[in-house]
Length: 198
Image (cartoon, rainbow, N blue to C red):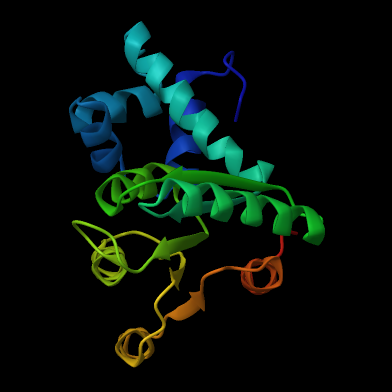
């Protein structure tokens, strides 16, 4: 999906297939009308240069799917966030699978990133200002037309209330300090549940 020389009709069709979006949804994301996207895909017209650039950018983002397992890590503590990011990358290396790790320091930004990145796994701190890990889990579950990623909560405080809430939502909870083996086990589980190509 990285070629810039392909016809717009092919680019739009491939992009919609990869992102599982309708022409109406793609039109909303680009700020154009449905009929405009329809005309591009049918080969009846060409987009303005800025729209063509945006289509290419979106295609490049989806091409990253082939580059590795996408993982989003969320923690408001900068040290814990860097540690979690490093552990996920190291676990991917141990498993021999490329991992694309994106880090966010709060749940609201994580929600925005989630829509763009479409990660397979989200590791999220439980206790954060604003939206906490449970509220983020609920918001993710409510997203329409979205393949819900595997959500794993991480916390330094393992009180029974956290475990009960996690169990009610069918979520995994890992205690801090995290270890590479636990992270690797989650990644291995996600990889084994993915449909195989071919």
